[in-house]
Image (cartoon, rainbow, N blue to C red; front, side):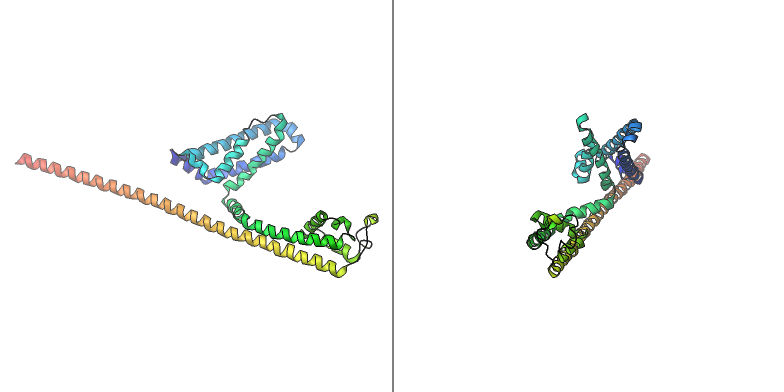
Length: 299
Protein backbone atom coordinates (compact mmCIF):
# COMPACT_ATOMS: atom_id res chain seq x y z
CA UNK A 1 0.00 0.00 0.00
CA UNK A 2 2.81 2.42 0.85
CA UNK A 3 4.37 1.77 -2.58
CA UNK A 4 1.14 2.99 -4.21
CA UNK A 5 1.25 6.33 -2.35
CA UNK A 6 5.00 6.62 -3.00
CA UNK A 7 4.39 6.33 -6.72
CA UNK A 8 1.74 9.04 -6.47
CA UNK A 9 3.74 11.72 -4.63
CA UNK A 10 6.92 11.05 -6.64
CA UNK A 11 5.16 11.15 -10.02
CA UNK A 12 5.68 14.14 -12.31
CA UNK A 13 1.97 14.82 -12.73
CA UNK A 14 1.46 15.04 -8.98
CA UNK A 15 4.43 17.41 -8.52
CA UNK A 16 3.25 19.61 -11.40
CA UNK A 17 -0.27 19.67 -9.98
CA UNK A 18 1.03 20.86 -6.59
CA UNK A 19 3.09 23.59 -8.26
CA UNK A 20 -0.04 24.71 -10.11
CA UNK A 21 -2.05 24.78 -6.86
CA UNK A 22 0.65 26.87 -5.14
CA UNK A 23 0.64 29.37 -8.02
CA UNK A 24 -3.16 29.48 -7.88
CA UNK A 25 -2.95 30.17 -4.14
CA UNK A 26 -0.52 33.02 -4.79
CA UNK A 27 -2.88 34.56 -7.38
CA UNK A 28 -5.87 34.21 -5.04
CA UNK A 29 -4.00 35.91 -2.20
CA UNK A 30 -3.01 38.73 -4.52
CA UNK A 31 -6.60 39.24 -5.65
CA UNK A 32 -7.72 39.29 -2.01
CA UNK A 33 -5.68 42.46 -1.46
CA UNK A 34 -8.08 44.45 -3.68
CA UNK A 35 -11.12 45.57 -1.62
CA UNK A 36 -13.36 45.81 -4.71
CA UNK A 37 -12.59 42.24 -5.79
CA UNK A 38 -12.88 40.95 -2.22
CA UNK A 39 -16.31 42.56 -1.76
CA UNK A 40 -17.63 41.22 -5.07
CA UNK A 41 -16.00 37.79 -5.22
CA UNK A 42 -15.33 37.16 -1.53
CA UNK A 43 -17.36 33.94 -1.54
CA UNK A 44 -15.47 32.55 -4.54
CA UNK A 45 -12.11 33.44 -3.02
CA UNK A 46 -13.10 31.86 0.30
CA UNK A 47 -14.19 28.64 -1.45
CA UNK A 48 -10.96 28.63 -3.47
CA UNK A 49 -8.92 29.12 -0.31
CA UNK A 50 -10.60 26.19 1.44
CA UNK A 51 -10.17 24.00 -1.64
CA UNK A 52 -6.46 24.81 -1.85
CA UNK A 53 -6.04 24.11 1.85
CA UNK A 54 -7.82 20.78 1.40
CA UNK A 55 -5.48 19.82 -1.45
CA UNK A 56 -2.46 20.61 0.72
CA UNK A 57 -3.89 18.43 3.50
CA UNK A 58 -4.41 15.57 1.04
CA UNK A 59 -0.81 15.96 -0.14
CA UNK A 60 0.49 15.68 3.43
CA UNK A 61 -1.69 12.61 4.08
CA UNK A 62 -0.39 10.92 0.90
CA UNK A 63 3.22 11.56 1.92
CA UNK A 64 2.60 10.22 5.42
CA UNK A 65 0.88 7.10 4.07
CA UNK A 66 3.82 6.59 1.70
CA UNK A 67 5.98 5.93 4.78
CA UNK A 68 3.94 2.79 5.47
CA UNK A 69 4.17 1.50 9.03
CA UNK A 70 6.61 4.27 10.02
CA UNK A 71 4.63 7.49 9.43
CA UNK A 72 6.89 9.46 11.78
CA UNK A 73 9.64 9.31 9.15
CA UNK A 74 7.70 12.02 7.30
CA UNK A 75 8.85 14.51 9.96
CA UNK A 76 12.51 13.57 9.59
CA UNK A 77 12.68 15.77 6.49
CA UNK A 78 13.00 19.47 7.31
CA UNK A 79 11.10 20.47 4.16
CA UNK A 80 8.18 18.25 5.18
CA UNK A 81 8.09 19.95 8.59
CA UNK A 82 8.08 23.31 6.81
CA UNK A 83 5.10 22.25 4.64
CA UNK A 84 3.24 20.86 7.65
CA UNK A 85 3.64 24.06 9.69
CA UNK A 86 2.44 26.26 6.81
CA UNK A 87 -0.73 24.17 6.52
CA UNK A 88 -1.20 23.83 10.28
CA UNK A 89 -1.08 27.61 10.84
CA UNK A 90 -4.16 28.01 8.64
CA UNK A 91 -6.16 25.78 11.02
CA UNK A 92 -5.43 27.91 14.09
CA UNK A 93 -8.59 29.44 15.63
CA UNK A 94 -8.07 33.05 14.57
CA UNK A 95 -10.96 35.37 15.42
CA UNK A 96 -11.92 38.56 13.60
CA UNK A 97 -9.32 40.53 15.53
CA UNK A 98 -6.50 38.45 14.04
CA UNK A 99 -7.85 38.04 10.50
CA UNK A 100 -4.84 39.99 9.18
CA UNK A 101 -2.54 37.39 10.77
CA UNK A 102 -4.46 34.64 8.98
CA UNK A 103 -4.01 36.45 5.67
CA UNK A 104 -0.31 36.76 6.32
CA UNK A 105 -0.21 33.04 7.11
CA UNK A 106 -1.78 32.30 3.73
CA UNK A 107 0.94 34.17 1.86
CA UNK A 108 3.44 31.72 3.36
CA UNK A 109 1.96 29.11 1.03
CA UNK A 110 3.90 30.72 -1.80
CA UNK A 111 7.08 29.64 0.00
CA UNK A 112 6.01 26.05 -0.65
CA UNK A 113 7.42 26.49 -4.15
CA UNK A 114 10.80 26.04 -2.48
CA UNK A 115 9.86 22.59 -1.23
CA UNK A 116 8.52 21.31 -4.57
CA UNK A 117 11.20 22.73 -6.87
CA UNK A 118 14.59 21.03 -6.31
CA UNK A 119 16.56 23.92 -7.83
CA UNK A 120 15.05 26.34 -5.33
CA UNK A 121 15.86 23.92 -2.53
CA UNK A 122 19.45 23.92 -3.75
CA UNK A 123 19.60 27.73 -3.67
CA UNK A 124 18.07 27.97 -0.20
CA UNK A 125 20.36 25.20 1.04
CA UNK A 126 23.37 27.08 -0.32
CA UNK A 127 22.28 30.28 1.46
CA UNK A 128 21.74 28.45 4.75
CA UNK A 129 25.11 26.75 4.39
CA UNK A 130 26.75 30.14 3.75
CA UNK A 131 25.25 31.84 6.81
CA UNK A 132 28.15 31.14 9.22
CA UNK A 133 30.69 32.61 6.79
CA UNK A 134 28.36 35.50 5.92
CA UNK A 135 28.19 36.39 9.62
CA UNK A 136 31.95 36.97 9.66
CA UNK A 137 31.84 38.95 6.41
CA UNK A 138 29.02 41.03 7.92
CA UNK A 139 31.12 41.55 11.06
CA UNK A 140 34.02 42.78 8.93
CA UNK A 141 31.65 45.11 7.08
CA UNK A 142 30.31 46.43 10.41
CA UNK A 143 33.85 47.23 11.56
CA UNK A 144 34.44 49.06 8.28
CA UNK A 145 31.17 50.99 8.70
CA UNK A 146 32.05 51.97 12.26
CA UNK A 147 35.54 53.19 11.38
CA UNK A 148 34.32 55.24 8.43
CA UNK A 149 31.29 56.46 10.40
CA UNK A 150 33.40 57.84 13.24
CA UNK A 151 35.88 59.32 10.76
CA UNK A 152 33.12 60.93 8.69
CA UNK A 153 31.52 62.46 11.79
CA UNK A 154 34.85 63.97 12.82
CA UNK A 155 35.64 65.31 9.36
CA UNK A 156 32.29 66.46 7.96
CA UNK A 157 29.90 67.14 10.88
CA UNK A 158 30.44 70.93 10.72
CA UNK A 159 30.12 71.21 6.95
CA UNK A 160 27.38 68.59 6.46
CA UNK A 161 25.32 68.26 9.66
CA UNK A 162 22.38 66.65 7.85
CA UNK A 163 24.34 63.60 6.73
CA UNK A 164 27.27 63.52 9.18
CA UNK A 165 26.05 65.51 12.18
CA UNK A 166 25.97 62.46 14.49
CA UNK A 167 27.40 58.97 14.37
CA UNK A 168 24.03 57.41 13.56
CA UNK A 169 23.51 59.91 10.73
CA UNK A 170 26.95 59.03 9.39
CA UNK A 171 26.21 55.30 9.49
CA UNK A 172 22.91 55.84 7.65
CA UNK A 173 24.67 57.99 5.05
CA UNK A 174 27.32 55.31 4.59
CA UNK A 175 24.58 52.75 3.98
CA UNK A 176 23.34 55.08 1.24
CA UNK A 177 26.87 55.22 -0.16
CA UNK A 178 27.42 51.45 -0.09
CA UNK A 179 24.17 50.95 -2.04
CA UNK A 180 25.41 53.57 -4.55
CA UNK A 181 22.24 55.65 -4.08
CA UNK A 182 23.28 59.18 -5.20
CA UNK A 183 26.49 58.83 -3.19
CA UNK A 184 28.21 61.40 -5.39
CA UNK A 185 25.92 64.11 -3.96
CA UNK A 186 27.34 63.46 -0.50
CA UNK A 187 30.85 63.66 -1.91
CA UNK A 188 30.14 66.93 -3.76
CA UNK A 189 28.66 68.55 -0.64
CA UNK A 190 31.94 68.02 1.18
CA UNK A 191 34.07 68.72 -1.89
CA UNK A 192 32.64 72.17 -2.60
CA UNK A 193 31.23 73.06 0.83
CA UNK A 194 27.60 72.99 1.91
CA UNK A 195 27.17 76.71 1.22
CA UNK A 196 27.98 76.08 -2.46
CA UNK A 197 26.33 72.73 -3.10
CA UNK A 198 23.46 70.62 -1.80
CA UNK A 199 22.02 72.83 0.95
CA UNK A 200 19.69 75.02 -1.14
CA UNK A 201 16.81 76.01 1.12
CA UNK A 202 18.59 74.63 4.21
CA UNK A 203 21.24 77.31 4.67
CA UNK A 204 20.18 77.82 8.28
CA UNK A 205 21.36 74.27 9.11
CA UNK A 206 24.93 74.95 8.04
CA UNK A 207 27.29 75.25 11.01
CA UNK A 208 30.50 75.98 9.10
CA UNK A 209 30.80 75.53 5.33
CA UNK A 210 34.16 74.00 4.51
CA UNK A 211 35.34 72.65 1.14
CA UNK A 212 37.62 69.61 1.44
CA UNK A 213 38.04 68.29 -2.11
CA UNK A 214 41.02 65.95 -1.70
CA UNK A 215 39.90 64.59 1.67
CA UNK A 216 36.32 64.09 0.50
CA UNK A 217 37.33 62.28 -2.69
CA UNK A 218 39.70 60.00 -0.77
CA UNK A 219 37.09 59.23 1.90
CA UNK A 220 34.15 58.42 -0.34
CA UNK A 221 35.97 56.68 -3.19
CA UNK A 222 37.90 54.45 -0.77
CA UNK A 223 34.70 53.54 1.07
CA UNK A 224 32.96 52.66 -2.20
CA UNK A 225 35.91 50.48 -3.21
CA UNK A 226 36.14 48.68 0.13
CA UNK A 227 32.46 48.64 1.10
CA UNK A 228 30.86 47.93 -2.27
CA UNK A 229 33.43 46.28 -4.52
CA UNK A 230 35.38 44.19 -2.01
CA UNK A 231 32.63 43.28 0.47
CA UNK A 232 30.06 42.53 -2.22
CA UNK A 233 32.49 40.17 -3.91
CA UNK A 234 33.20 38.53 -0.57
CA UNK A 235 29.48 37.87 -0.08
CA UNK A 236 29.20 36.50 -3.63
CA UNK A 237 32.24 34.29 -3.10
CA UNK A 238 30.83 32.87 0.13
CA UNK A 239 27.47 32.12 -1.53
CA UNK A 240 29.13 30.50 -4.56
CA UNK A 241 31.21 28.30 -2.26
CA UNK A 242 28.03 27.30 -0.41
CA UNK A 243 26.37 26.57 -3.76
CA UNK A 244 29.17 24.21 -4.79
CA UNK A 245 29.00 22.39 -1.46
CA UNK A 246 25.21 22.09 -1.71
CA UNK A 247 25.49 20.70 -5.26
CA UNK A 248 28.06 18.14 -4.21
CA UNK A 249 25.88 17.09 -1.28
CA UNK A 250 22.83 16.79 -3.55
CA UNK A 251 24.80 14.67 -6.03
CA UNK A 252 25.97 12.39 -3.21
CA UNK A 253 22.39 11.99 -1.95
CA UNK A 254 21.15 11.12 -5.44
CA UNK A 255 24.00 8.66 -5.91
CA UNK A 256 23.24 6.95 -2.60
CA UNK A 257 19.54 6.86 -3.49
CA UNK A 258 20.31 5.26 -6.86
CA UNK A 259 22.60 2.71 -5.22
CA UNK A 260 19.91 1.91 -2.66
CA UNK A 261 17.24 1.52 -5.35
CA UNK A 262 19.61 -0.61 -7.43
CA UNK A 263 20.34 -2.73 -4.35
CA UNK A 264 16.62 -3.27 -3.76
CA UNK A 265 16.13 -4.19 -7.40
CA UNK A 266 19.05 -6.64 -7.31
CA UNK A 267 17.73 -8.22 -4.12
CA UNK A 268 14.29 -8.66 -5.68
CA UNK A 269 15.87 -10.28 -8.73
CA UNK A 270 17.84 -12.66 -6.51
CA UNK A 271 14.71 -13.59 -4.60
CA UNK A 272 12.82 -14.21 -7.83
CA UNK A 273 15.66 -16.36 -9.18
CA UNK A 274 15.80 -18.39 -5.98
CA UNK A 275 12.03 -18.91 -6.05
CA UNK A 276 12.27 -20.08 -9.66
CA UNK A 277 15.11 -22.48 -8.84
CA UNK A 278 13.20 -23.75 -5.81
CA UNK A 279 10.17 -24.42 -8.00
CA UNK A 280 12.35 -26.36 -10.45
CA UNK A 281 13.86 -28.39 -7.62
CA UNK A 282 10.40 -29.17 -6.22
CA UNK A 283 9.21 -30.20 -9.68
CA UNK A 284 12.23 -32.41 -10.20
CA UNK A 285 11.81 -33.91 -6.72
CA UNK A 286 8.16 -34.69 -7.43
CA UNK A 287 9.18 -36.36 -10.71
CA UNK A 288 11.75 -38.51 -8.91
CA UNK A 289 9.17 -39.53 -6.32
CA UNK A 290 6.79 -40.63 -9.10
CA UNK A 291 9.52 -42.68 -10.78
CA UNK A 292 10.43 -44.28 -7.48
CA UNK A 293 6.80 -45.16 -6.87
CA UNK A 294 6.42 -46.70 -10.35
CA UNK A 295 9.58 -48.73 -9.94
CA UNK A 296 8.39 -50.11 -6.60
CA UNK A 297 5.02 -51.03 -8.10
CA UNK A 298 6.72 -52.87 -11.03
CA UNK A 299 8.91 -54.82 -8.70
